[in-house]
Length: 227
Length: 99
Image (cartoon, rainbow over the protein chains, first blue to last red):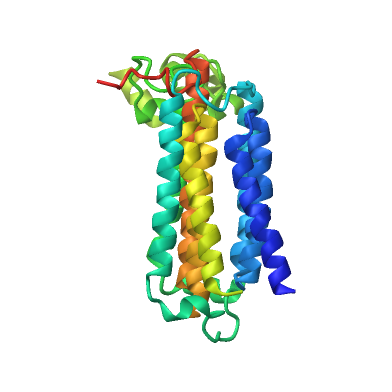
């Protein structure tokens, strides 16, 4: 059963990978990558990494691929020739380089002399690969990488917002400071306006004639008037 | 199945991804091929984690997923910015940085 499942998932993963590279339309490439990710999740399950498999499907195939589909739909998936017209020789060289890389990797794997490489793996402890074990590792031994990863996500989100802004975008000669990023655009009401109070600069001019008139004069103002 | 088979699939997927990065010209597809390579590395990490019976490799795989998500976010942001500025969506024609 395991062997059958492994070969089905392995062939699916490789076919999906070839589809990503070989299909002309970027949209089909994305769909092919989704199929590849599902096959890979099956392989993770066979390796008893349940949590990683679930994260793969939810985060990768769910969220990241939807982002890809949105961008492909926005840009418009133009059909492009897989091979460039002029660089046929370079393409052949690139494929040769990839094949050489594969040979090197296989030789390195076979020649590594790892005795466990032909085995099914070590004997496992209780709860290996389950969310409980992963969570315990993340919050004890790997707390620092966990926090750094969350900070990296935050930086990437801010970077994407800066890059994909409507005006300016990447550069365009417009200096962009952090203060400008967080400033409210002109013509958008602030919370003070919504509450019916005068906003920043107008406050001193409007205050005497405004709703304050009926209020009792504070002692500080009266002394100023007398003077 | 022995761990070696998983490593073989990982190596093959990695090389397919590398070939795609070298041959394709659409930056979107190049990003997809980078994803392929990262996933191949993930498969190798999880396979080694199973081989040693140790969960550290799976944590590493999860961190790689986070880094891949960041890379996708920034990369797609760059592509959208290129599209807005009417630049060609083709890495062969974007040679302003080529000395």
